[in-house]
Image 1 (cartoon, rainbow, N blue to C red):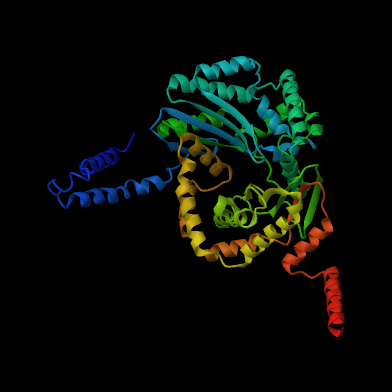
Image 2 (cartoon, rainbow, N blue to C red; image 1 turned 135 degrees about the horizontal axis):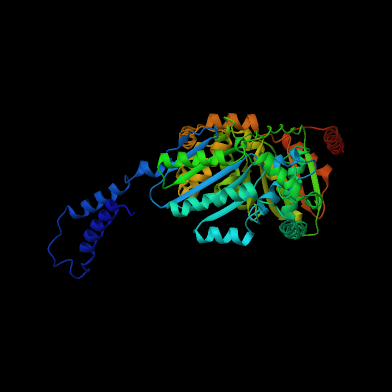
Length: 513
């Protein structure tokens, strides 16, 4: 509903402004003078607009923890504006768990997600789709590196809600993963993987994960490889469902036009209607690099694509907020970021350069990437690397810090601006074992963040001396690149020392002459 107070104030302001605008320049000398307080009233009205619902706009939703007999964590936010309910079941069954089913089976979770609604022992794919469509419901299943999600959006009317939930549970528990659906998805996946080979950015991303994670479960792409997906069978997919899509490996998030009692009943229904099972094992910690790791992918193009980065933090790391602010300052805020200013604004090396920080169950990634012309590649890498070194070493600029914090605080409410957004936040909070008031805590931490805290987090977690590079280009001199990187760090290798000595001798000979 529109804010009535705001509408009345704007209407008052427009009326008072219109009474002034009616007078033309010719009429001004003959008309009676306006009351001296008229413009002041208008200004007061304008000033008062600044304070409307200021606190409400920044306030995170109230999150409730709901109980059920099976002790499956459930988070709930009641929203009464729309007659809609969003439900997400989130399982610790992303692609990182694929090899718990069978070795070399990357892509298993992704295939299970794609085939979930392709038929059960009672319904065909068409009947399932028609049922959800007839109820005005949206049903989707997705697999990511960490999590496997089953989502439902439907009207809160019990005549729509209840049958949609029943079908959701039926599909989850009785999907057959039949061969016809499997063959169709296999063919589509093969086409997609062929397209990857023609896309330098995708190639770079896949190699980057493999180079950094090695034998860790995060190393392989979630969609699998041509070799691994060929080995997927309906039997393996059913084993995946029976072992990982279970209540004790799940959390529940509910958002919408429900009472606490109604949401608690739904929580108990989901927790009891899915086989109990056991939680998936924790992921191992990946092994960090101790030096530069330079990976080169030859690719015939005038454009070179560069990505560099290293292991970062887990989702629960106490330095997460500080590093998110730092990442935003360095390469996440468009033209205001340090990386963009150095590479594009000052030198015109690239159209866009960005850094990212991912935080997951096991350590995520800090990385930066951009594209540039082949002849500018080496110098652009030098500039980007030096910018990172300086950012970690030099004091944080307070003005940029305050602007970054303000921008993040203002945009943060967008993360819970709709039922679907709120529910996604609840799912992440539940999955990563964060406190139920995490959204409120995040805002408080962000607003209080100091330059000293960010500097400490940077120096603890960001290492410009152990970056992994993946470069997709026509050619690359790895030795020259490593030498340049060491020079940026102030490291004098025997080769560099020899060059310095040689130059000194030549200069000495010239002075004698």
